[in-house]
Amino acid sequence: MIICKSEVELGFMREAGRIVAMTHRLMAESVKPGITTRELDNIAERFIRSQGATPSFKGYNGFSGSICASVNDELVHGIPGDRVLNEGDIISIDIGAQYRGYHGDSAWTYGVGTISDSAKKLLEVTERSLYAGLELVKPDVRLYTISHAIQRVIEDAGFSVVREYVGHGVGADLHEEPQIPNFGTPDRGPRLKPGMTLAIEPMVVIGERYVKTLADNWTVVTVDGTWCAHFEHTVAVTPDGCEILTKLEE
Image (tube, rainbow, N blue to C red; front, side):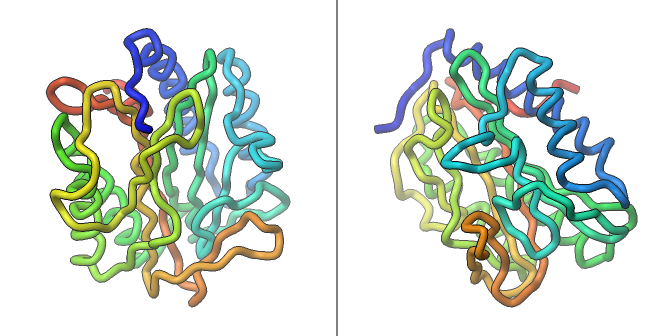
């Protein structure tokens, strides 16, 4: 069942989203050569808690971090630890915050210092695919029309779409219905309605789309070792379009 949120619930989600967006701003300032992923995790957790919220991921199904920190060929669910970021790396940071019982969820991939042209293209295409999907979010649009738009941007650029991990509804639960793949046939799937809240999150690989989970049972990496990127926003469907809840106002 897809849950449509009340205006009160959307208010809580706006605040959760604002906290997530502010945390990403801190991450963008903090990602530099020499910092460890654990240090980034500590910065994020301290800020989230200072805002009266709690990290959504901390303890979720046993996850030990407050953020997911996935470097280079790590797609998602990287556990913060002693890994030191080096010049030229890329890091996908997934952040969730729970405020008054409601979650905001957003991921962004950052370059560490100066990155290669191929990495720059990967980040640009993945972010562009996210916004191609968001542009179509409005009432009565079928969900997989959005999925198809994301897929077209990625594959037209020569990159691959991961199939095993998808976006999702979000609200009082971190993961709600519907599942939102980043590939699909247009004009299929449930119709969007005002009040739906969705975490849309393309995950893109330079090489082949296949991934595997490491022995820690969390970190997902590409099978061929090529680099990957992850961009995500939480949005609410409005009567005439969508509101991005995890983006700071300009």
